[in-house]
Image (cartoon, rainbow, N blue to C red):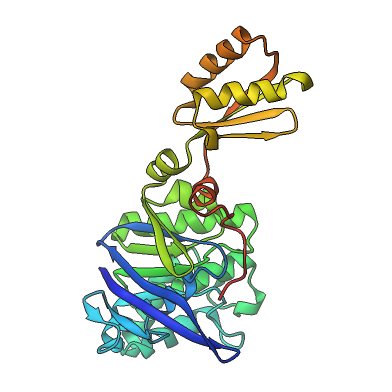
Length: 318
């Protein structure tokens, strides 16, 4: 569905060339639900804009939905849907009219575009809002309209750039309910970016992490967390025991897996549930008093921190 090789995009900033995407390789098979993650400025949106033919690559090649993005951009656009970060609909036309106009732009007859508009309105529970103007809709309703516009041409591949950003938790859940239902019913291939890491963790079958324009990790969320971050044990000890506890923990784990914050000794391990009793036993044998202990599963932000030393939430979008 997506086959990209060496995809590169350079910009000129203050007369200096800057590579927003650097030789990116990416394959997405039909039917996959892929989260594309990275901090602001990593190149996520730039990559999506190239794959959707909105930006020409400086170098490299990509085939999307069976067509080359450089030699046949019209063929790509006819077969994909794209929901950008900003609202797609204008404010001066009714919701249904916006969808009909979108259908006409894809070459549908008036009858076909009206029928398809009614289908996507029903699909996204927008039928009661068909006669309203977009500027009268709530944030969640307007975002569903954006998705409806992206689905008018019945795409096999849908790109979603931050589909739920700025929405309240209820609206976010509602958006994802509709997205997942669409995928279940139509087997649509989905590639989405998000800053809500819980969405990527719980929704995506595959997570691709990008930083400085390059892919640095690719796998399921569970695989990435187990292989690159690990579980975390936090043991709080009495003040005089901090140095001894740190040294003792470092003898069991690798030194770089042990960190200290105040009286809390944190240890990264593959399986916290089985490792915690062992650490508590060793501390007790060493005469170290533990006053509290807890375990935590890793997050995708922990994965990125382990890879780069930075948080996924750092930086500004480019």
